[in-house]
Every structure is written in structure tokens, then in C-alpha cells.
Length: 255
Image (tube, rainbow, N blue to C red; front, side, top):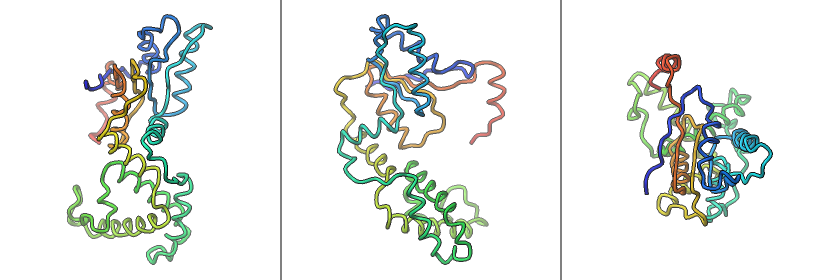
């Protein structure tokens, strides 16, 4: 299977305009039929905006819109198709709330229990980031020690070791009350699709993805799996084409 094509889009170009223009190359586009395409955008607002733009360009004609979804929505549909949605998954807003009271009882937080809700939100975000980056060993009690982690200088190792021990203790408490969450489902889906790529009932003529900046390893793999369902997969990436844009990008650090 050919990899998706990378389409550079200058910063000054509206990405949705570019998508609308490229969708006009679909075989049925002249008659208002764009349904043979799958478009993945990072948020629901962007999905709505593209839909409105395509309707406006139709100038009152009948339009069959492409399937425009977020990767989260696409992943949920794939999880249902592969049977990975059977477990009950807690609402993301509830996860810090059930962790906070348990954090407040830990000895190293006993003198500042009022900080438990904020710390719970930060810890849950880190739990998600570690797993989506495929670094679960950071949460494992038997994982690497602080001194062996990249970028940790010897003078920093004791502080990092203490923080790492606390993170792992909090992770153990989290798992006692949230044995499975939405991130587990994404990780499992990523693995399942690597073993067996999705086989859509009707293969899209075009599968387009645009508007994504930094993206983690797991979601990147899911995005690639979605693009691979199309006969023509395209990933739109912003690029500094004009002089001012290049000067702006030159101010960015390596990170």
C-alpha cells in the first residue's frame, strides 16, 4: 500500500480552502457529490467550518458532503467495529475527581490537601501523555530509575527520582479506581489496526487529513490508519513558503 502523500500548504493559505479545492477533483464533484471522500480534522469546529464552506461554494445546489470527522470520532467508530468498546469507559472529566481524594491522603500531600484537585488534573494528563507516547515504563513501579532517563543530569537525579516515585504511586491509586479509560482503548485500537488494518465497506476515493500540529505516537498511527483506507491518502502540512513566514519559523527552537 502506498503511503499517504504529504501536501505542503503555505501558512498564508487557508487550509480549508485548499481541501475544498482538492475535493472538487472527485469524479462526482461536478454534480455536487463529494461523498466519496473522508476528511479528518482536529476539532468539531473545523469539521463544521469545512461543511459550511462546501455548502457555500455549491451556490445553493444540492451537495452530498464528504464524511468529515475528528480522529477521536473515527477511532471510536473503529473501536466499535473491532469490539474494543465493550468495557465501560469513565468520562474524562471524572477521572481527576475520583483521583483527588486519594491523593489528599498521601503523606507527601498531607500538609497541602487543597492542592490535590489541581495535582490530580496534572497527573491524569501525564498518565495520558506517557501512554500515548508509548512510554508506559514511566508509570511502571519496576520501570527505569531517574538516572537512566535521557536528559537527566546527575545533580537533578535525586529530585527527578522523588517525582517519579510519586507519579508511580499516584498511578497505582489511579488504576485502583479507573482500571480502564479512553486512552487504553486508543492504545489497544492502535495495536489492533497495526495487526489488521481496517477494511471499510466502501473504500473512500480520497482520505484527507489536515490541521494537525504536534501529535503523539498513538494518535499518529491511528491517523495513518485512517488515511490508508483511502485510494488517495493526503496529509496536509503547513510550510513556510513566503519570506516573512520563513523568518518567523527561523525564530523557533529545536523543540
